[in-house]
Every structure is written in structure tokens, then in C-alpha cells.
Length: 192
Image (cartoon, rainbow, N blue to C red; front, side, top):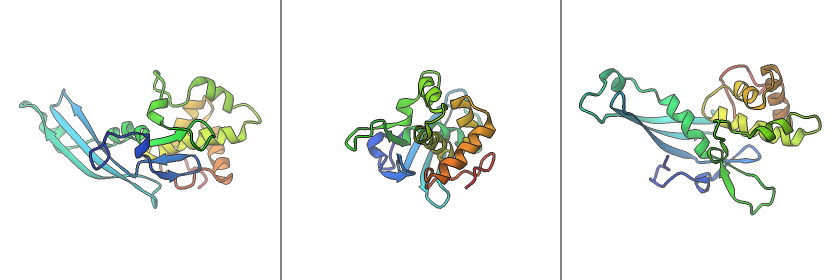
């Protein structure tokens, strides 16, 4: 993961505010190597405020082995690279102190591949946790929507709630002023 000018992606590169609690890198370059097919794929993506997500602007496939798979070279699968890259481009502050450091979502991702730790997921689903819940919804929704993934499914999985509940919480978070600058056209409508 790199910035377009070749620097390593970090929370510091996330300079554009999205929503009320997130910052994102305005653009990134990501490369994936598939040793089994002998093909390297590099994508460049830029955040589109009008679309509310990252848009891939460049795809480059390159053979890296003599016995490369020609079909794989001709047909890129950039969505998977985009989905893996997005958590490195989204940052948030874990402390309410304005001087607190920013952390990428990738740095928060647990060993089980989850974005929100189980203790946090259990806490935000309890009654009376509205602001905390909306903040977590914004993190999860933003991560999914920016990667063009279905936010309802990710929220349901991460918080262990039914998809209907996740969809309802998305609508309520948006009505409460969260999720600004993020939209999703994937999966169920999210009341936006």
C-alpha cells in the first residue's frame, strides 16, 4: 500500500475527512502478486465524493514468471485488491482528545480478521449506547462502502445482529448526522 507519490500508506496519509469521525487517504496505489498464476496486479484508486467511495482509475497487470497464466493476465480482478487495501486508507481516533493519534482500520483489525473487537461489538449493541453505536456503525459502514462492499452484511457480521437490525441502524445513524460523504449501492438500500 502506497500513496500515489510512492510513500508507505499510514494514518498520516489519511488527510481527507469523511463522515464525522473518519479520515481517508484521498488516493492510493496497491499491488498484489499471485504466485500461482505468475501475475502482478497494481491498481490506483481515488476517493470520489460524488460516489461516496473509492473508484479505481488504473489497473496494470504484469507477468512476473515465464509460465504465467495468459487468461489471468488479460482479466484483472481489482475488486479483491481494493477490498484489502481500504482498511489501510481509513483512519480514526480512538480517544476523544483532539490531539490523540490517528489509527488505521487495518491496525485495529483483529487476528480473526474482524474490524471491531468482540468486547466493543457487545458493548455497542446494548440499549442506551446510541452515540457509541453510531460511531461504530460509521466505522463499519465507511469501511464497507468505500470498498464498494455491502455495509449491511459487514455490520451484521461484525456486531452479530440480523441484517434487518443492521439496515435499521444505518438509517438511524444517517438520520442522526453520521455517514456524511459515504454511500453504498451494494446490497440493501441503506436509507440514504
